Image 1 (cartoon, rainbow, N blue to C red):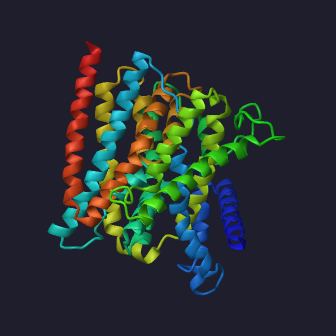
Image 2 (image 1 turned 30 degrees about the vertical axis):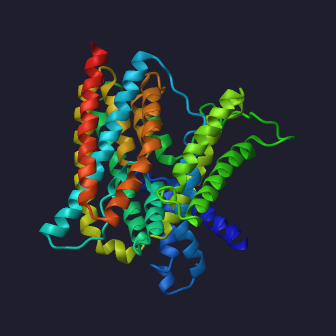
Length: 445
């Protein structure tokens, strides 16, 4: 229990240091780097990788726990996704939502395929052996962000791979590159293509990371419970962690009896299915009022911040530096191809607010959901367009299936080789492209 308190206090201190550094150094503000990443870099400097070689600052036992945190916290982060989900039935909304989800899926498939193609090039052409599952990190990092490094790490760890820490470090490094480049390139596009004047006030708020004006400060969420019974935050946490715990127990039971297939499915897959059931029951019992999506989102955002700080603070520098050339190559090609795919598909399938839709999808595909939201807010400061709703619903669909797809590709490449996920992804790309074409022609008739 002392370790739990110590680690939580340490990560909290790092995040606060990150916030102070971000607030004081203009250059870092202009890169739009989150405080959790900056705090993680401070932790990396204090670790045995750098300063810890000369002065023991962080106990080695702490570092072992810190490395495992992203893989642990990713469970409640993913399990919480179905809770509070809503879908509209408007035809126009449905079309834009389907197109948004379709483009996000295509980008996911293309990024994964590109990663494995680069693995193939290094192996067969350059005669340089990378670790077996190298390639999935591009999509995990670009479209999943730093928090998704836990998906990569946990999957490989459960498979028995001895390089799971290195893969987690590569994912975190790629995520940082994608996040910074995505925001800067997005702002560049807005300056030259947007009909709306770029709002310096919005840029300043996002670069600083706080809102001083009390009139502009948003509400944390609604209090659906009275604290005399159970605090609203405690209620939401209890559901998320309760479902996570039951899913862990379920998987452990299947593993103890060595049940085929069921014992190999990821724990968050069980958790997401179970959360769907819980959310359905709440709706049937007319208790959906008890869930506030904002409160749920704040919980997952908090877990993501802690996960990011821990992941960055434990990057295995020596291993990552050995992979610096593949990392630079995969990030450069990934960034360019991601932009080309999204810009071309957006121009083809969206009839209104093309730039706003393009940049929100691009931000999500090179950073995280909030990156796309930042670029959308800069284009549309008051969120007067319908883009946010379409974008949010489309993202929710891919957020449900994306992690499962990443895990499946990692498993295929580790158990066999990179050719298996490559063929699988080519089939998915062809099917998704056909679906988008067929769907849009049918709807437009």
